[in-house]
Image (cartoon, rainbow, N blue to C red; front, side):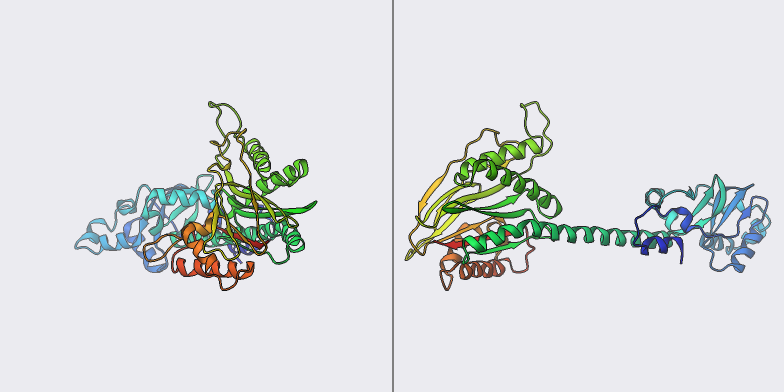
Length: 410
């Protein structure tokens, strides 16, 4: 097995990157005092050679391309004129020359910068300036492709394990929700393997707290933000309790800004402009009292016998972000719910999904229509109806964002 193949298949920790030495093939070389007749003889003897290096002493000075050389020498009277002259007559005087220790990534950039002849003719490999052999462009491309595939596999393995970790952090909230509100229904679908949407539920005296949030980005960056945001929310719940959602939004806002370096005056350079949109609520089942605070997310309420879905908008200020003041105060909405009232909350991955004949966003109006059209006013039936409406609307369009929505009945 070659050194490159061994590197690519070995699952142990990497201690050495493959280098130009792994591509080095020993080939005959010409000297400056050898003739074009000798070059022709060498090409006829070694039909696999794409090019012949030319050296002066042990230092490479050029590369003779087989196709160009044979094309030139086949012209009328060329053999008579040039046959006994030095082989430097038809050599490329500026071939790509690299040291054997050069890593593959650097070699690839140099080959691309040198132009297509480095890929078609190959390149000369040296050790401490002396000729060692040649490498060819096709072999380089194969190794680069194999390395990229290997790196992609390693990245995907890491992301897949990150998904296990992310789902583990959400498991306790699902267990809490199953305990405090068994009939509730939750849909969480990251666009990629991991996502930037998260949920959090906790029990309190006389009620329970719920949060549905959409952090900046999706994929790995979004997943990192969920860890920061959920950790900030956990700390706020421990310090302040679950009964005041607006106050919790303010606490999480300050924590995110501090963590991401968004604090400071107007002249300060922020570490990032990231944050989250969120819906926080506290629900007391005995009184059917719901306290809601939203940061760019809304609350949908379908009351028994109602002909339309009520919409309670959150405030147009995100949590974190550079333009969210550290002292910004969200306010609470207090709702009394009749028995059988259904509450639905979603992140914007549902509302902003493009689809339909004109490739426009699904929008809140269509979400409300889907909630209202559900065959039964149970959380599971409503979520299923919304999910079906989303799939029908999306059609062949690409999923734009993570998806998280939740419903429960009073």
